[in-house]
Image (cartoon, rainbow, N blue to C red; front, side, top):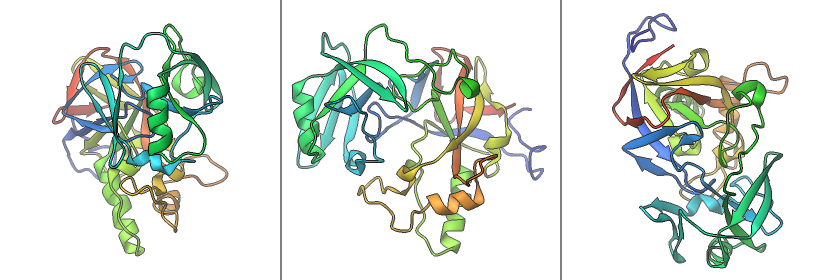
Length: 292
């Protein structure tokens, strides 16, 4: 099927194109918009390379600390910089040496990590106004995280600190459809950052990403594995860290695009994906894609 989806839905021929690329160097902190990104089996290069944990090793996300959404991240040749208005900035190098061992888990899957040090720990604890001490960790050298959903993603699929899948692909038209429904119900529309995807595309009919095998172009191929079940993070305004009192868009999405096969309705948005071919390929905003 060449750059069209005319036999998937309405018969309309549409070009499928990458419109945005984003990575999130630190899990649950703000992402970085890119013009180009490098594909790896673990996800886009430098995505979810670090994670915030408490002193006991329990990982922290916006689910329990929404203020994480306010922290900006940036990358340069040396490493990552975290910044928050009123708290200045702190930097962590890519090539950290040493670091105390930290045993943590990502959704029950054990991970061996290394502490990035006291300076960034003090900064995070203060900037996030946390009563508990917070630490920044990276994956321990040589450690390969076991796959928590082998039946859906394959036992040989590995990530750093992403929830489970290396890639999350989202559709501009699905967001537009959701926003039309929100507006019709008297709710505020939401931006794409509520869903924290990596690869955003135009040209697919709303929610048809759940019915396609994946995307490819030239030497690379992403296989779609399963719809991404959404959580309370979708209700958090990424500019203010405030939760929507009506639990939107979670509740509306649960009605118009539920995860298939669930006894209790749960909202889906975006498609979890793995890299079948194309390790090291650079993809760009504006690339035209094909579906299978």
